[in-house]
Image (cartoon, rainbow, N blue to C red):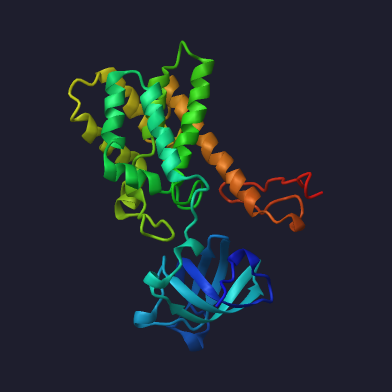
Length: 325
């Protein structure tokens, strides 16, 4: 059976396809004659997008569906505040027989080339011996490098695809390099780039990489990547007894403050020029990627405005390209 892509579903379409269960919630019926029964509210997705779904008589027991499972869906697309699939049949599929490329997006860049670029930064730009030794302790470790090269940078917001963390990290390095060039007497390039390379290391433990929808690990939910990254930094620092205390303090603060605001998850706000520069480089990479993803998903036939994005808290203007006019 040919795969129907989520982005191509239109109101009135009949649906027979595979989909990834991104969200599943059981809701009780309000009608007295169905007291004690429930229906399913779902979010289904694939690499092309996501769509709401509802199933009035869901499977139970061992056949009950869970988040992050791939299912066969039969139904039709109705209109309930936008497209919604009304599911008539829902069956779990064998994960071993699922084509993961339909459900798990991948960076457009080659991870091997990106990792070579990252290691070239360490070799060419990190002049201070202790900073270089620290980075080599991380990226010289095969298992860490493999996990870092494949991890997403987020589950939904930005760079949320395989190798997204590596791609995002290199973008942050790029923006940090340009900030340092503007203030060479105030910003230490090798210190700032070290913070850029390490700021999101906790994400390799925050997400389950075997999960098709990049589900959080228990530690990811309970501790979060900032605190996990600080723990990882502490463990490597323990093997570097001669590491200068001042540099260590700067790096610790950069990791803890890189989200910029406490309401965004930072234990501290940036209080050094290096932490402040890293925060803005991180934010710029994330926001531009959000814009790019929205622009890629935009259908020109729908007009010049993309759909409202709840993370950016706006709709964005996407004028026609000269080629499409």
